[in-house]
Image (cartoon, rainbow, N blue to C red; front, side, top):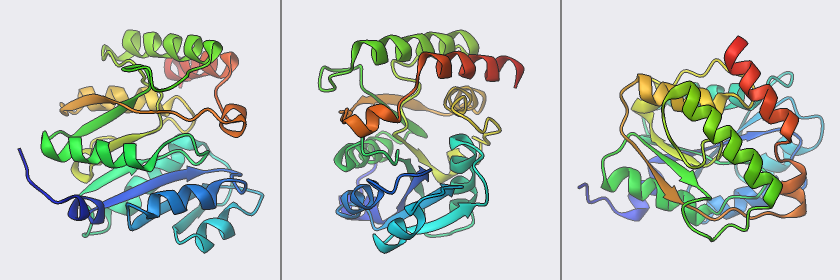
Length: 230
C-alpha cells in the first residue's frame, strides 16, 4: 500500500472534462474541482456557446475540437495531451454537467493510489446515496448488461463518467469510439490491457440541468449498435 499525502495526490492528478455547450454550469464545476485539484483540462468538443471563455475564466486549461465529434473523442484528446506532460501520474475523467462531486473524485484517486490499481470506476449503484430516477436506472442497468455481454467485464455502473486511472493505464486505453459507446469500449480495453480495477460508490446529483443532458433509451440502443457495427 502506497502512502502519499492527499495534497501530493491532487497535484499529480489532471482532471479531464469533456465539454460541449455547458456555459450554464462549467464555471461552477471547475471552481468545485479547483478546491481540491490544481490541474483541470477542459476538452471542448465544438461548443457554439460561451463554454470555452467561461472555462478559461474559471482557471481551466482548454483545448478545442473545431467541430463536435463526441465525448469519447474529447476524452481521447485529453489523454493524449496529458501523456505529453511529465508532471502527471494520474487522471480523473469528470462530467461537465455538475452531477459529480469533487470529493468523490478525490476518493477515487486515493483508492487508485492506496491499492495500487490501474483504474477505479465510480458507481451510483453500490449504495443508496444517489436517488436515481426509475427510467434512468432502467436505462443504465440495460447498458451495464450490454457491456457485460460485449466485454465480459461486470460493472454495476459501466457508463458513469467519473473514473480515475493512471497515466500509464491511459496509454492502453486508446479510445476509437467517439460517441457515448466509448464508455463500454473503455471497459473492454481495461480487460484487454490486463489492467487492475475496482469500483467505488459515489453520489450523483440529479439536477434538472443534468437530467436534461442524460442518456435516452434511443441513445442506449445507439450505443449498442455503435459497438456492434462501429
